[in-house]
Length: 344
Ligand code: ADP
Ligand code: MG
Image (cartoon, rainbow, N blue to C red; front, side, top):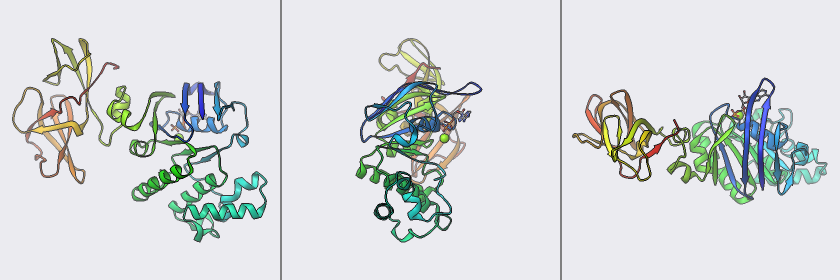
């Protein structure tokens, strides 16, 4: 449905915001672009929309090369982070605006706006202006405006980031259901890994204009391909510790650990999720020894930070089993859960 070939965007001054991106997004797919601020997410979305011209490479939508097609004729609808609603127009006029541009008659526009508003639970608000709406309602008007013109593609640039935490979760579930019902190919930009994991069929993890990994949420969570993805994904950051492979074992921060199959001798980075790190209060060789530095309450579990020599190691510990700060403890990797990297 969407095909990128060698897509590159350089801004004046030499910033390479997109660096030779190749990607295929399937018809009806919910695809998330995930990465830190400044990695090129908005630039990629704007380039797909036709609001930026690529320096090189091409873009196909629905089997047509649209690289030099103007934005108005790409059949895509974009929802911006700040919603970009017209303050002087009421909800109906805002939702109907793209249809007005497309020269749809007033009667049909208003019928379509009312129908879309009902789908997004906005029927009681049609006569209000954006200034008279809450953040969540404004967000739904922006979505309604995108939905009303029946585009081939939705482009969402962090549409939930201006909502408070609770509303954001509700809006996320709502958005997922809406996308399922409409089955419109969607590219969703976020810097929030939890949002990407929850919403997307597939995720591209971006850094400095490149894709670090493209895969399903479970592939990316279970098998992050590099330390960048490993440190970016997960509600608590992965433990990443330098070590050495040799003599049939891994030596990491004072622990001697089993050598996973296929790892050759040499320096490595050892990756272990805090969720797969257990705490023992009695000594063992196959564990990281240290002292409990910080205990944070996560609600149903605790995040325990162990100071182990020069390193900090975190473990998620079930409620009621958290040790007190200052306690000597051993962090035990759960069998088969460690990841071994060589990329830095
Ligand atoms: P993100 O959305 O992931 O935060 P952006 O796509 O906005 O990142 O920006 C990617 C890079 O391109 C950044 O280094 C940013 O400063 C640069 N950039 C974005 N837009 C422009 C522009 N119009 N002119 C020059 N540099 C830009
Ligand atoms: Mg952005």
